[in-house]
Image 1 (tube, rainbow, N blue to C red):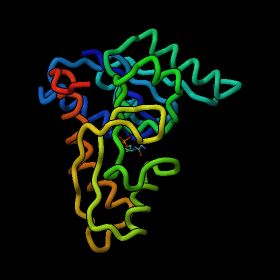
Image 2: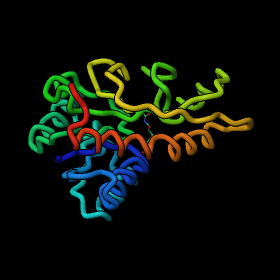
Image 3: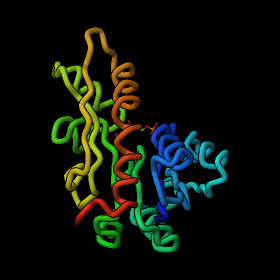
Image 4: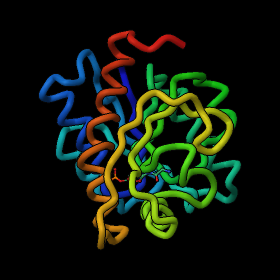
Length: 198
Ligand code: GAR
């Protein structure tokens, strides 16, 4: 299974996928390209360090959002992967891309959907929301991407405890370690092994 991983930042989830492929918890899978919307994303360095083709497609390099969207869809068409993995990709996926790759795009979100998801909930903001509401359990979700924001069918979820004194940063790290870096590689492996019926 050929996958493209889309990233925006540090790329710890990308690293979990690379590690999963190397230690064979993800079978029969190759990362054929990493694409970032942010030229300074450390995820791009991780890709290069691991010999994976990496490129930046930034909205800043286009006159309009439509042109950026078009470039992103064109890139995916060109590479034509079996699966597109949004691993901390903080960009709205163009409707055209969803239509072109039905049930072939998955996303990792750092909460138990339907809590703390949708517009405005990304990255640290998700954990700020969870702490503000005072939930005692949070977690992460891997889901298929549809036309909405965080609304597609859920593949895997894992719960994580919120502890007294947590800051958004501390909680974010626990959710990554205990949930995200576990369920994202697991979901990719389930798909590569044909264990997901769509
Ligand atoms: C992760 O926590 C991921 O779940 C989140 O961004 C972070 C990226 O970290 N994604 C979203 O909030 C999507 N709505 P990483 O670059 O170290 O993988």
